[in-house]
Length: 188
Image (cartoon, rainbow, N blue to C red):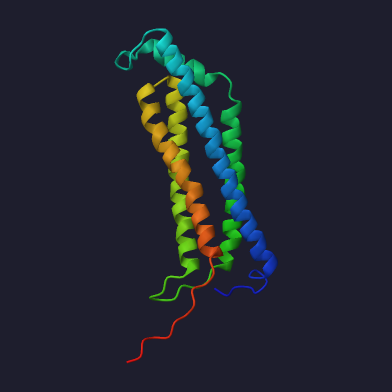
């Protein structure tokens, strides 16, 4: 695959970097908003449980109804979370499409910064796919008031949600690092 020199030009690289850092920031912001939403739901749910003297082992239908009621309440943070995700992913995917045309050919036996960046792209794609699935399952569990599923999936959803921008930021740092100086092979 022949790469156009115009795609590797300074403005194209500058745009790709700006898009990469911006999409990372948007996804990190989505994670923060999601965490705030989760904390709000959890705090309100635990307050309800404490006010009604319901122990952790006594969670039952009354709690399920309360969880579903809390989830269906104010949806502003939820939709802010989803909007930031959509904006970050749209920008990232556009950047990925143009970035693939700038990718350098792999050299056998050598791992380049470009290779690490490319692997981070595929890692991000896998994490994002799992994050979407977990987000949908978590939403369903919240609608049903399923405390156990929400507790388990919520932790996994948050962990993967944090990993996504960290992978992207790490990929950006790898590309931004200065090239390692070439050393002469040892004398024989």
